[in-house]
Image 1 (spheres, rainbow, N blue to C red):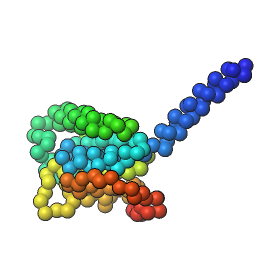
Image 2 (image 1 turned 90 degrees about the vertical axis):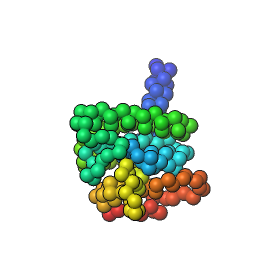
Image 3 (image 1 turned 180 degrees about the vertical axis):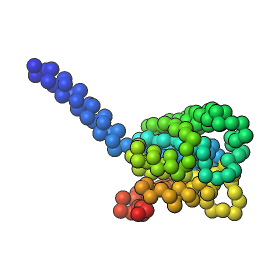
Image 4 (image 1 turned 30 degrees about the vertical axis):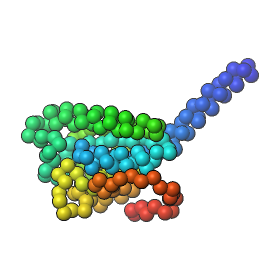
Length: 189
């Protein structure tokens, strides 16, 4: 009886420890339009949190908030084909980032939707208890003369329930010893 209890206790301890680890794992949402800048933001985030395992959600929303969603996916081909291309590009992004960050213990999941970007981000933040949103500052259109792309700007303005980290175009990750506490982080209220 004692041995059985001990085994059950060990199994419960393992389960509790596993669940505890999952619960403290940072959950990071990275929207992508499949631009180089979006991938750079994802890559940067994996490096920023390289010392702790994180759950990354890579999101592509087919109903973006800018009239020009061209250059990466041809919008004249129809909804079904757009979804198919989006899923294929998400799969490519998934495999690339897994390969580029295989030593860090991160977990990745892709999300493909046809909803408006700010709506799906807000839903995802609440449903998946996202801790941080990471976005590139320039999207697929790469509009010159703007500090920040319109999608990133809209998300910073509209999403009030989660901090947003905007990663500048072609920003290189440099290892730093500086750490920040929650009190150091300015959150939107």
